[in-house]
Length: 453
Ligand code: NAD
Image (cartoon, rainbow, N blue to C red):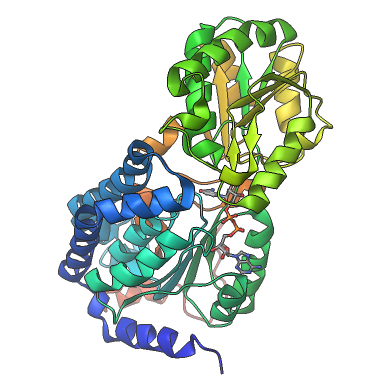
């Protein structure tokens, strides 16, 4: 007997009762989610500090504020999003009503990773609640303090007939996935994403995959390199580099590489002081396994800045690797740590070819004072998102869709895109019983009838 079947069935019964469909109900649950974020802020910050040594400012910004923003945006816009969308009609349907109904899918499963363990289950959950679904969330078992907090506290705010938290790792998730869901939303690694896709295929369940990969960052010769360095170091070292949209590596000419290293040193010094290990603003690697994986990547290229590690604390210093070859280990996998390799190229065309010869990334960044160069990179490449002259700021705009392409994922969310992701766009045509004579044109016998095309 599958241990989760009972829970999924209870949620399905609630969904079938129609309880989650009214606007008032959805708003009441979104408001409850907002209260959870507000009232439990301090315990959330404590859990994130225990899991990831997450600096309080980073946690407030990236986990709590972005979630609250989504909650408020959904509450304020829900009425408009839910409205039937009337569409243009043809001659034969002039007397009819033709519209798109945004129907909830039913029972939705949301599976999250450990790097933003609150944000990456609650932001999709906002969209799923707003769209009128019942939801099971499965946070990552690796960020165990946040997992425990969500399992204990979320049910005290939300209607337990419609929303549940399931804990556990791969084994529990596999058992959970044996059940039929109406939509699956997964955030995590591409390898596990394939497993989720296979499980979804068994029930022909639609899904979103928010995956990872290597995000390139092209830096042109023309830039103010201190500004570039500030924005690069912030993006690379936020959450100790464990961000899916972090700039993963830099592509620039050898001259720019040499000019960029001193400003990178200055940015690291300004942000984290001479001893980043003692800075309250610099996080830690999630666990020993990831620490060892990332430490092994320090052998690529030459260490231009940083390179210090401390296994007891899972600490890896902000590090810049210069003269990295494309074939070296650091360029084979997503780094997910505070290491920034620089690969030198001859010009922007070579950078574009380099980017296009690899899997399509979740994010792509290009720095140049010349907007033609930024646009050249934008026009000649493909990626989930793109930012000119900064890193990671696309995440802060609720009006932009967030998602990957190709190996970096499937589907999109944030703001209204989340509502649409968790809604089935149902094609509705309510016909008039009049004008029957017109209908005779389509009824057999068809003899001597032609469309004249
Ligand atoms: P992961 O794929 O190892 O785990 C994600 C979730 O899947 C967890 O809840 C885990 O319990 C579950 N899981 C793991 N193995 C499983 C299995 N065999 N069967 C069923 N479920 C399984 O990812 P992670 O290490 O938690 O997170 C890091 C990855 O997530 C990185 O690749 C990163 O780029 C990606 N990520 C992507 C985004 C995005 O928005 N695109 C955001 C954050 C992280």
